[in-house]
Image 1 (tube, rainbow, N blue to C red):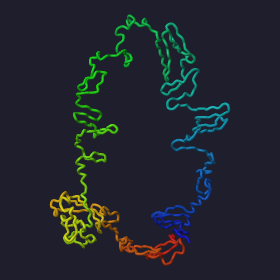
Image 2: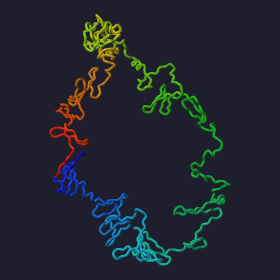
Image 3: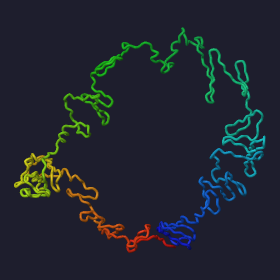
Image 4: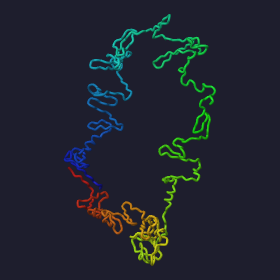
Length: 573
């Protein structure tokens, strides 16, 4: 059988008597309600009581049931007190149908709206307050009209009169909100030197015509009407100019002055010919010590003491950039080069980028490399007595010395004794490293064999040439090989040895093997349990009684034993 999980339940109590634990469930068959606890309160989250309310067709109004909309979010009908909403109709089973807004307004602005009223009725639609009628729509056939029974106010600006005026009167405002029917003029009287004429304002046109030498134009822009009178070409001759403005067919002196010539009235196109340098008081310009005629050119300019071009200044023998941290670029065309004609370039900063020029001092510094010596067979791992520990048959770093073996002595307490030696009956320093000049700082040697030092490189780190060879300290450090390996996470390094860092709480090293602490064997179905505080683990075999089906649950009893079960029971209330 499958697992059974039972929650708290009751057939007599309507609700749990006490607070359920957080997340704990309980069901009452008495009230048909499902509860869940939060540690303080028991919250109702469902039950048959509520599912029965939902057991009907979605979208159908059903008695004693919940409202459930259909797939279109609709209900087929809705009843509220005396009102019924069904289809497109809101109806009242009793009394008036009232639209009331406590605040704001009743809006039909969601879409274009048509208000249908009763046909062929003198009171098809009325707006009434108490017994006082304000507006009536009369739909009497062939005599339809809208009747206003109160004075009409247009906005807050003016109010229309409630009675009609007399024939020919017009509505006129006094500018303060008063609008009345008022008599207005119907004609306009136009007078001339000898005649007058009336113009009917409603039917006649008023025309202003030009004559010989005069044109008239009437133009309208917005609400403004303008009248323009212009003089035609040839329309005015000298006889029409009064006074002495014209003499001898010309304009009199002072008839035209600078005030009559507008800016731009005379330009080069109005000047014929040209003005030669000989007509000018200053016909040349001097740059440096060279005079250049106006309109002329010169390719060689002398006498300049300084020249600024954009951000560059040429002054004396110096080219200077004037913008902050500005570069100076020498840019030959194509494959052209920058040639300093066998002169030196001085005051150059040491390079920092791959394509920077290098100074002599920089090159001298970096050209010094390692002073490499011939390799040695072995290297020491601790302080030795050179005379007696470098003989044939002695052991160095796990290997037996043979006559003539080269040995790196690097761990001496007196570091002046460090160096490269030849093993034999009487050990001596190697011929390529037996003087101070041959064993300077930076001397490098490679070790071929040995348990700890094999395949590693070492370098002497003292400075320059030892002052007293054999006495001045000559320390040796590893330069290459396993010494370049760093211990990562959960690892440690001692010399060339990498170790695993076990915590000896959950993991241990047993017989050179990392394992779970306390566990030496496992079998199918075993359970691993903590043994004690920081004591590792113990191995428990599977329960002696096997589960009857694959769906049973494995749990621990109060004695710490693993047992099978198929029921998790929350009890009752």
